[in-house]
Length: 488
Image 1 (tube, rainbow, N blue to C red):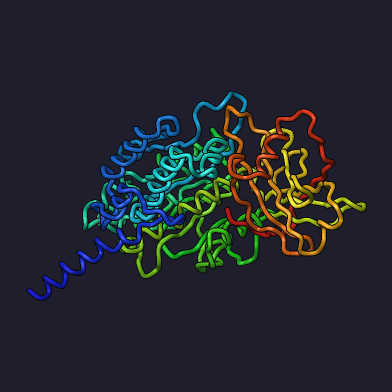
Image 2 (cartoon, rainbow, N blue to C red):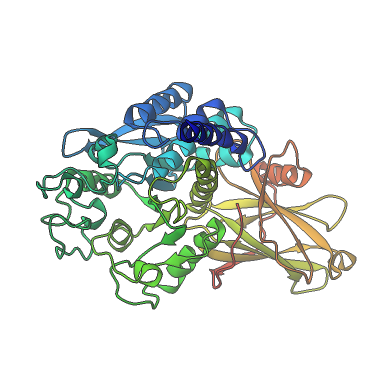
């Protein structure tokens, strides 16, 4: 009886604790539906039917933002869906950079499903509220494709408590041991594929590259669209793996700037451990998804391994709120980085007296919209100095000069700059990114989001964007040379 009471008390504490922890990064309490991410039928995680119920709810609540795309079928003919979030009524000719997110490639790793569901629901709700200019801007100007369940057959079978350790799809490769049957989808991609593992191995890679309908579905989806970045969620270990995972070396194997992009993302994501599989884990992984997405398709693709090592594949219920909140922030930042990412701002004396040089760094893997951007620089007089600059290219710096009295360029003097892209008003309301830097001081490392309704410098930039008489400031661009990072 004592043992039963202790068990009941323990269970009740586990059920209560996440409710107290369910506060997002902005300090606001999560909506009621979020608790379903840690009160489901598979060791607290939602099963397929419970996940579908949430996804249907989001589709009903956000018809102007969400669409559901069938990308293929599993081995057992279950449909595989991608959920696409972006403002739908975008004018023809506006090309939006894309982010891909996948989860449950391995069926015993439901933490990724919780992250995918949370991201879809939060993006939907934050966009509808319209109070977060960052979310409005990102979903107006970018697309995110989320595939919550890559391996629907495997996830269906782990509903059986005796089959919780199933990792692969359900191809009958090991009849004597159903748990070990199947093809490891994350070894079935067509970059440095290897058939070295036996059929009952957890890493059995299939008869040939892309032999499985699940990997074929992702292949088609990627080949038909231009994705800039991909996040493929796995469990566990609190690390970030990225290409080349097949390489039997600890030395960098990527071009210098690509390596810098991965490191920038790892640092903003907050991972202390990051790199290819051999560096982190001491083994190689042939036919791995990130290697194909990057090596064959040129996508900056990586796999966040989420959940603590002590928690294993099914992180305990008290860890799930933190997992979904941290990784929502990571997804949002990756979505930002698919396009223009104002990563760093510096100011210094210009080429002549009374001129100040501003340097902006685009750390994004895409350029800004349009041919020009409008800027407004505060701190050089009673009102901001405004002008237009040539749009900042992918992964580049741009320098330009503005008039500024010598007294306002003393060491330590702060200057605020806001930049707004040349995006049609029919695409998104004017939203600025603003940063504060100082003469002779540290560079700004964080660009805040602002609207002209709340920020005078942003308002000046927006006015100059639509004014045909705004001065075109001479600017020059160079490739980004360092890996200095910024937050969102």
